[in-house]
Image (cartoon, rainbow, N blue to C red; front, side, top):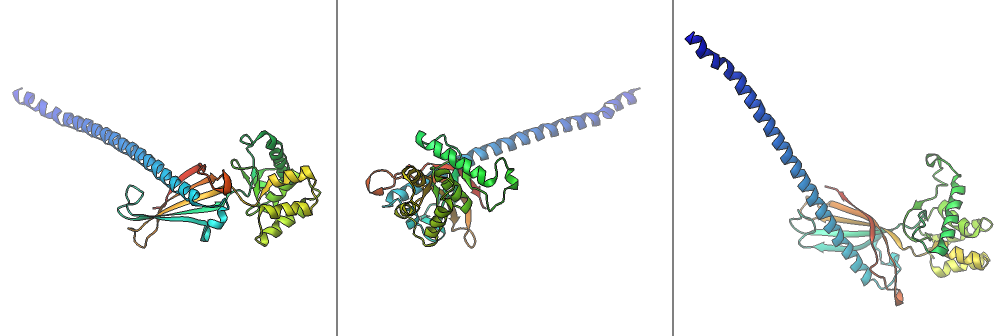
Length: 287
């Protein structure tokens, strides 16, 4: 009896040890998962904070470049591939810079499309915008499934920016939609052809567009609508900012920001204002 009573605790010891070990393992797993979750949360907050302030710093550099420009003809200020400015940052811009970084900012015409959101327009321009939208539907086919639209007749669309379509970047179908919406179909072929001739000759200016209207013998109302519907000097631009690190092997871009800026000119002399709020400002991590 005595021997059996001494063996019973030993028989129960192993299950108890296993249960305690299992409980400790579960507890440690839960704690590790909570710690990992908190780490990810802190990393996400830090990344969001960094992305916000880096993006804001790039925007301020962009506005400084705008204020330094003496003309609202942005295209004349751009270098190869639309390069607007290059800034060497001795202490870097990102948290893990560890040395010099280089910022390159590029601009690209984003106004070669029709405006489909008319809420921001002046009341007198809403009817014209809606007329252009209707013309676009007729060109693409009213009620057509977007997937079935022929790319050659597709009309480019956007939800922000000015009413006018840029003749520098618009497709034939897009430019035709703007002109038909403004002036009707009778002179659309002539006007489209003349505007593309200006583009081919690199002779795009407000004066040249006005001469096209004169040549087509537009009446007063048609002329006013035509000059509102097209533009030689876009105000809406795609903005791409690339940050490259000097510390990487062979150099290279480490992150990129993309957005759209509506650039307005105010005051005399065509001086650009800093009213260039960048919309859809998105960060892309390259490395």
